[in-house]
Image (tube, rainbow, N blue to C red; front, side, top):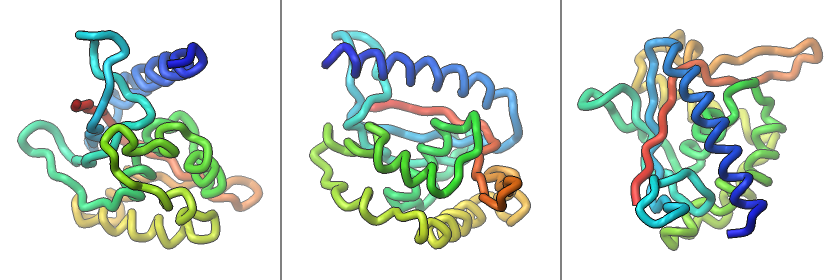
Length: 177
């Protein structure tokens, strides 16, 4: 692993830990994102979030009451991206840019041998509304109402009529080998 990749990973871990602490203080809605094929930076060390993992599931609730959401791989990546970048709302264009440049998204599943090629090409700014509509419908099936979905996935319109999306719920990550 290159030193720049290691520094990137450490920075991401710090941001995620701080964001997770903040999210734990908010709201009744909790989600767990389960990553598989995680790696250890040092033998015997903790599993860390890194490019090459695969998102196995997104669950709503805590402990034994948690329910898996029937998200597609793309939906799980969108949710993970929103969660990892939740300090600010993001426009459709910013989310598409994250898909194009975020190492976690670009290398999704490489450690498992999964072939997720094509995910980057299938998310465009113009098609984002359709993807978001399906995403919201799946959330609604789990949380029960449009109002709850609106609480979880806030949308804000800027002064130039650009829409920003932001998760306003608690999110934690679980890493498995």
